[in-house]
Length: 216
Picture 1 (cartoon, one colour):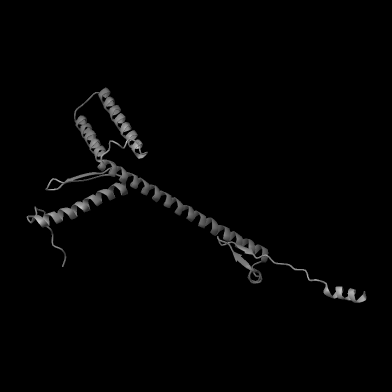
Picture 2: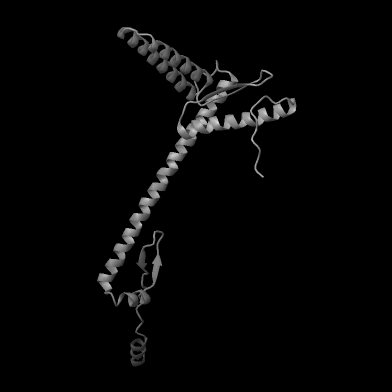
């Protein structure tokens, strides 16, 4: 039997209500984090329990998300009211200056400067941001290495094919198997074939030396 549909209403039992809150809160925070990583979205989540306890998550920082929300909310309100072009550009310039100031502050913090005034929660958010940035860099680096390996494999396969065609031209189509059987071949790391070096030794003319000694 499948699970019955849960009626969305307040849970009367306090223990069940607390358990449900804990499970769904963790799931909500997990989904918010996944959304920020997978989609590169700026996500801010604030949850207050029935006892007044705060739980939050922010892809950058809670303060930055709230400031951005308030700024966009004000811009929406202003769009409803006609304003002059000068006022629009003044507002836009002020917004850009604020964003620049925020980015400069974040850059200093990422370099380890200006951390004395941050709270423990701000430091945790900064750490999370660094971890997500490092994860993104690792993923891009792994993807680049994987692509390079594919290209290298194609080049090696092409060189092996060219080597095979060259051997056919040298030995002929019928004599290539005989040449492979008579030659000692060592395989390199990339699959190239090299003929093993042949050690040549000159025999000593012992018989002539003995005849000469007997004559003496």
